[in-house]
Amino acid sequence: MPQPVGLYALATASPPHELRQDDVVEAARVLFRDRFPNFERMAPVFQTAGIRTRQSVMPIEWFFEPRGWPERTQAYTEGALDLFQRAAQGALDEAGLTGAEVDVIVTVSSTGIATPTLEARAMERMGFRPDAARVPVFGLGCAGGATGLALAARLARAEPGCTVLFVTVELCTLAFRMDEPGKADIVATALFGDGAAACVLRAREGGLAQVTGMAEHTWPGTLDIMGWRVDPQGLGVIFARAIPPFAREHLRPAVDSMLASQGMVATDVDRFVCHPGGAKVIEALEGSLELGQGALDHERAVLAEHGNMSAPTVLYVLDRVLRASPPRRSVVTALGPGFTASTVTLEAA
Image: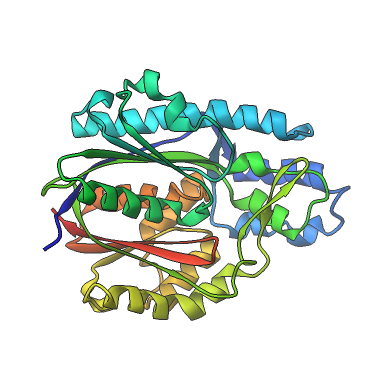
């Protein structure tokens, strides 16, 4: 039997500036109406996205001026570091640990570039030991919450007795662009928020839940579905294909295959914990996984209150699921660039 890995703590952190969706759509109307003639045709996406509020590291006024790489990078470095520290400290406090007791730090972030990376910048603030291993990961996008949790569990299992801190921080709002806006930019403006989440894992029984399995599936020929493009003004969002119909058609066979690799079938799962990419994505997930309309209630609540924060979002959902009524067996699942589905199987401790 593989060494059990316990999820001992899970904490989230949101930035200070709250954006009401009604205010965002009016701001977008002012910013885009002369640059994107078909804005009014796209405007209903702000109402159908399933979002009431979101949080941002910068106030809404910051987005009214053109911003280039230097300003975006400064905002990312400062804002992400603050959220990293708050989420990480919350998880360590919940686990009853200090930074000096962390052996490995896994950092997942794809919405900005910082070298030295976030965990290095936080070393002295958090009291991490000089010999703590650092594992920064870039490029996982929305799948990063599930994939990062799986990576952290693998590292904990590989070195029994060590403590692994996993932190994911995404500042999606900083990708907002006024230059040459397209449909993907309008959709991103309606969906994206900022946030962070952190977990503590140890190779022992106990904790909030036990990590018992993990798996990934990458579909061939799907590199154009989701990602970033690198432009002179900053990162630009890529949504080349509609994600909801793809998820509805292709997710279930992939999930069945991933579960089969762990000796399970879908009916063995008490709760699928899904990344809520948007209201239509949630509906597609419920349909593909045959969950029944309205089953993904915590997903809808997180989306409504925080928007799509990319990687941390599924951990916000998991936090609610575990604190409400921990299921006997759950599967955390998220879709991200690649195009990849990532899953982590949890069982009640």
